[in-house]
Amino acid sequence: MGIEKHMYELTYIVNSVLSEEQIKDVVQKVTQYIAEGGGEIVEVDEWGSRRLAYPLQKKRNGYYVNMFFRAPGNYIARIERTLEIDDNILRYLTLRMDAKMERAFKDGKKRTVLPPLPVNRDND
Image (cartoon, rainbow, N blue to C red; front, side, top):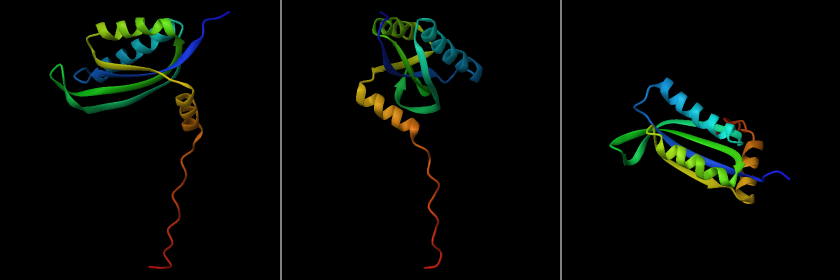
């Protein structure tokens, strides 16, 4: 019987002082590490450079990355340790998604953007 994989959400902040190419390499490295460890990448969403709420390591801006993946529970500590020792990653947060969070994630993917409502110009 296989190891049960749970759904996780990982958000991390990359040092925005790095060049665009270096940031892409960090994102690729984290994604590849999870995939090589038996994780299944569901989605990687790069939010881009944003101002931090407070300075981290004397930095005011960071490059935010949000990803969803499936992995065995015992692998999360290894992922977090790798993120902890990487000097280019300022902060990270890993959440194990429960059934309600997974439903909301799937429902969000099913929704489509509705076109804007027509404006009635007769009353103007």
